[in-house]
Length: 362
Image 1 (cartoon, rainbow, N blue to C red):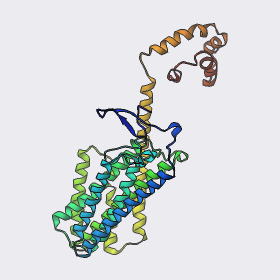
Image 2 (cartoon, one colour; image 1 turned 45 degrees about the vertical axis):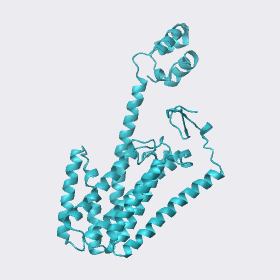
Image 3 (spheres, rainbow, N blue to C red; image 1 turned 60 degrees about the vertical axis):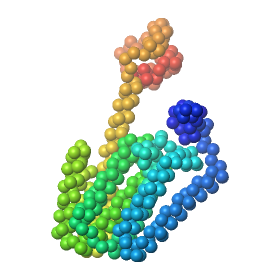
């Protein structure tokens, strides 16, 4: 049993208060063939449920109501996802490190890295459904068109915020300067980001397909400029002054508009990938440095203590032995500099093995 956070089930008293959480010894999760089969069957059930929703609402698209079908599919997936989070944690997912809060936890919708992966996959499915359904939809009025462009920018802002939180406020190693430290969780985190931005690109192309044929490029440009102006104002009010984070959708949207008007070519795909790669590198480098700075500040706060009676008592007990040891006296009084290894070997290991390590670090 562990009083802190863990991956096992929670044990509560009669009043519902948490007593402790069961934890597996030696980092073992107790997975056997039965648990693996349950995991596979539950994943398969989720896939079949999403496929059933897709096929059911696809009939609505065939009846000439693609906008209603897209909205219902998005709403239905959101309701199903919210219902699954209400049942959280679900066995055996809660026994996987991927679904534990130790790696990443941002909100009720993103309680773990595994949930972020599920949300990214569902977002890609919804974006693909809308991309197929809205190809032959009727053109919306101006107010709805402005709302769709705003939804494109708002979703891009949210994805960028989730990406920043994944880099800055998680224990997943995403440092590009130490590639040897990347692990499977790092790969899955980058996969989540790639899926989210792919979903955004599909949504952006769906909106462009819906708006451009009915509206001239000049009107589309007016819509884009108006939405971007509102986005810049909102970012400024939110305290976001990094222009890369504010204006990165512009080249992607311009590429989508040009591709829809003139036909997509390889250059459009390369430009889009280059934009996402530049944005990803910027976020990873900037916010990894911030995360390291915060970790060093936290470490410094733990190391620095004004009053520690235990350490003071240990120093009082150790001081006579230090004064009576000629080797230590020579080492500390000599003008020749000594290395940290010499000081550690002569003082800490022999004289104060029980002394708190943070004092030695100071």
